[in-house]
Image (cartoon, rainbow, N blue to C red):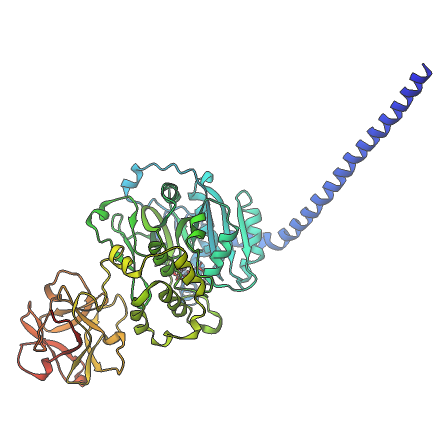
Length: 564
Ligand code: LR7
Ligand code: MN
């Protein structure tokens, strides 16, 4: 009994100690916990003190309904004046953007036939948005559009990559906005410690991404209804397909969302100078379809790709600096190394097209030129000659840097040649010295040459004459194509009013763009029954068509003539 009693007493003491310890532990933990919480709260309170009122000021300027649906928005009075001014410094209307709701909804811009499709993808996307010194409201509108237009079960995360911006508003205020207004969404902010340029910034974003697919966006975009579904559905179907939405225009001055018509859309091409261009869909049957359409290239800023495929196919050339070139590099690589690039007509995203870059580049380097030289060396084989005709100073220039790794990649992936790419993916691309009757400089009286007078891409201007350059430069490089066009890249010589000769977009239907180069040196224009003639250079209008006659002013000599 004693024993039992004694045992019982011991048990009681133990129990008491145990209960005491438990109470103490619970209490301690609570204390500990509350300490953390209170620290957290203090930090938050401090942040709030600093940013909440700024943010509320910011938010109080927003005019509900402004720009709703994507309608053009107008400002009045001082705002209008200030807004116009900001266009010159920021390349977009800052005042208007700051007044427009960050979560504005756009109308459905798609072809009505898109509504007949149902997509049921099971994979998730990481949306990667890179930015450098962009306007806060524009960045946030991009983020909101992704949140609002993407079903949450398809969105793994949004990754914002700050390429070391110096604008204050993109620092604490942005962080505060994310941690308060966007706290219910999975948004990750990656700060780069140095300005790395957009190519390496995207790579940093891709490195931390965990979704099945990567979807890249510029930081001044707005997604529209069902933009994500067809992109992911296509990736699910084929992991080697890289997808581009239709990129609509958000006007920089009034933020109107404008579509280029509902049905018509274009795909990507390129110029020999190394620029991305828009081209019409070539195959008739593709013009009608709402299914993904092959695209020879992409613009670069907006695309979706399987995450693993992104790395397998060589991600990006990490040695590309700044801005430019990575879009064509990736386009050629995807096609040549076994992938495909497609435009998805039922996915549409708006992009603010700006007249100039509102940011500067370190050292003022021509990163577009250098990056393009890198890609022509790795992917374009002998066709790089055309690029160097535009940029002779980059040929064999050490600024291009080391290419070993990229060349190894091409070998490792057993990629096809650029000729294969041209023949199979972009057969419409005009090659100045292939399948042509004549090409090169076109001389008249020994010292004058046909010249494009530096006409910019997409413009119309007179065919000119200029003193021949000692080296064949692209501005004096013309061809007589197999279709009888007197042409330079996408410019064709066309007779206007039976008299003047203009360089204008080639249409491929002969008519006023049809010429015959005769062995006797005349360039004959059948539809006007006249011949290409030159006057003295000094008279300005130096090249036109006139009644054919035997004259040295109608005698033209191409550097290369293909006799057949
Ligand atoms: O140093 C920089 N660091 C950056 O993070 C410079 C820029 N950036 C960011 C910038 O804030 C923006 O979010 O990179 C993004 C793209 O820069 P933009 O918007 O100045 O480029 P862009 O729209 O004029 O140019 C197009 O071509 C570029 C070539 O390098 C990129 O691929 C862009 O993403 C691309 N944009 C598009 O494809 C959108 C459609 C335009 C067309 C046609
Ligand atoms: Mn852009």
